[in-house]
Image 1: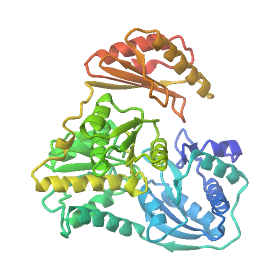
Image 2 (image 1 turned 45 degrees about the vertical axis):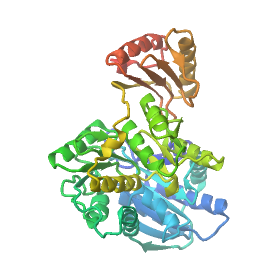
Image 3 (image 1 turned 180 degrees about the horizontal axis):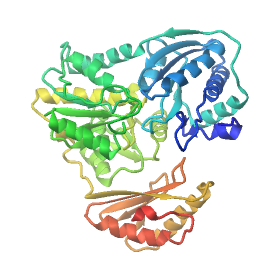
Image 4 (image 1 turned 90 degrees about the vertical axis):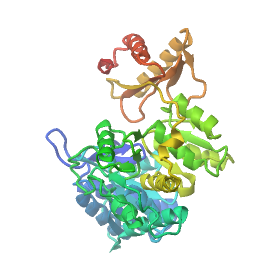
Length: 496
């Protein structure tokens, strides 16, 4: 990649930095050694100014991607040249890297080398400070500094450090404390884990098994950055189907599935049914509202009407349906707490969940731990965990159609489409524009709703439609297809 300020800024992906890290037939490497060095040097320069501190301690970890070792070496080279004290944590989950700041190492900052669920050829840099993950504006500022940054002339040092052992002990201690003081609080439970060949195999081997759980039904625990079995993504249909099959084939009591770097998770009940998306939000809300009666659960915009009814009528909490994007829901929940409104949970239907009690860190392993605690308590009573969400009303149909915008500068065009659909809906009998809505336009129809929003990063208008009656979504989609056909820069092929 030719290093220009514009090309560096193109690597910004929300609050992370991502790009091609392995050359393919159609893609050139963007995260070259020099690019990584410049960005990591820029981060230290930025952090020194922000913290008004010269001596920096930084922890570095990575997921299982095949480009991880090369990128880690470049990152450490830059950190050392800036005089930093670097803790090389090796293979590690993204949430554990934040925990190096608040536990044991007490680092000033940390870096996880990951591209989450993206294909094997991509990778990325995810930085943390004591305030958590970076904001988008921080990433932009760092990338601007990177253009003129280079390797420094200082001499820091590198300390190999197996922080994952400490992190796993923390999770085990949490289970022991909440389930009971027995050394084997999970004895008698068969819990299977699908790590998708990402980092998450540690949860079966180093958290569940030492506490007595039978993890023999687990699959794809070994790290393999080519992801040969399925995409490590709880939202992926093939991945969740694989996890459901794992539970049924091995007669497990429960199943867990993680994404590549373990900041997201999903789960599977004993009968092989997925507990994902709205069902996962409902289960996490049961946990979060225990001791936080009347608390506000902040979710993304794609949750169902049945979930709101479950949270507010069944659990006695409140739901704020906010913007899509895990950082958006986390920041909103933090904002509510700072204003005096108790908000114990921020969660996206993608599986990102951040609990107030855990630094508002979106940690898939921590949510899994809270669910396993509940599972163990219910097991002793002869009850099942999915009984807790049996009253959740789920739609008969749920459809997503992604509509590409055929423009590089797509934002204004997409916003115009949404504005004109809003006008159309206001004049259409049987359609009611939702007043409490924070992105795009959400329109209530008989038995359900639909939401058209603009992707923050990509030239895409995602359209989500849900209804309690089978066959209704198709009719709504057909009407919307006809309405949108007047916009010549929209690609409507996915309506087929």
